[in-house]
Length: 407
Image 1 (tube, rainbow, N blue to C red):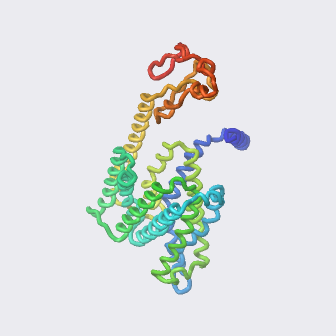
Image 2: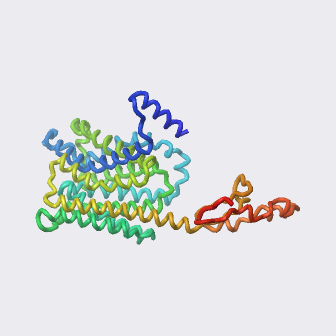
C-alpha cells in the first residue's frame, strides 16, 4: 500500500516537473535536516521577537512580546495542529490503558520539560547570548550518557562519551578565547540548570513512559506544561505579567514561533524519524550546535569571537568521532550476530518443506525448548513415523563460513 502510494507520487511528480521525484528516504533525510535547523533557530527567533516587541511597545511603554507571553500563547496555538497530527494516538482506548503511574510520570515529565526547562532557558536568554547558551549546553551529551548508565543501567558507549567531551572542550575554547578565561554568569548557570532539568525529564520518560503513545505524551505535556507555567508565573510575578496577552503586536508575531518552530518542527522531525535512515538523522542532529551558532550570527549579529574556528574544528572532530563509534558498534553487533546462530528444525518453520532450515540470531533458547510435533501427536495415538518425516542427513545442508551451502 505504501509502496504503491510512493510510486504514484513519483509518477505524478515526474509528469509535473519533468524529472523523477526523490525517494521517501531522501525526503525523510531532508525533513530531519529541516527539523534540526528549525529547532536550532528557536532561541534566535525568540530573542529576535522580543527585540521586535521592545521596538514596538504597547500603551505604557510595555513590551508585549515577552518570553512568558510567547510560550503560553505559542503552546495554546500549537494544541490544535498537534491534536490533528496525533489524532490516532488520542483515542479513548489508548487513554484508558494508561495507569495511575503513567499519569504521575507524565505530570513529572511535563513539569520538568515544559515548566522548569523553558523557564530556565528564558531566564538564560535574558542574561546571556544565544551562542553561550548553545555552547554551555554541550555539557548535555556526556552528562546524559552518565545519567543513563547510572540510573537506567544502560551500556556506556566510550566513543560517544569521548565525542561529547571533545565537543565540550571545543565549546570552552569558543567561550574563553575572547576574554582569555571562561566566565559563568547568571545566564550560563541558568543554562546548566535547564540542561540538568531536561536530562531528568528524559530519564523519567525513558524509564517509565516508553509504552505511552507519542501523541498522548506530546499533547498532555503541552497542556499540563502551559497550565502549570501560567500558574507558577502568576503566583511569583502576579497576573500583570500576562496583561498584554491579547496585544495586536504579539498576535502579529507569535505565529512565527508557534507555527514555524513548534508545529512545523515537530512535523518535520516526526517525518524524518519515520522515513530517514538512523545514520542520516544522527548526522543531522550532530550539526545542531554549529547550526544554532551560525543562525545566531546571521539573525542576531552575535560574534562568538576568535575562538570560533578552533572551537568549531574541535566540535566537527567530535562529530566525526561519534560517527566512527556508531559504525564500529554496528560492525561489532553484526559480527556478534554472525557468530551466534541457531539451527531450527524444519518442523518449527511455518509452511516448511524438506531441505529447508532457518538461521536466526541467538536471542533466546525458546526455540530449542520447543518440542517437535511428534511429541504432541503421541497423545492422539499417532507415532513419530506417522507425524514427522525422518531426520535424514540430506535434510540439513552443510554449514560453511556461517552460511548454508547447497549440497
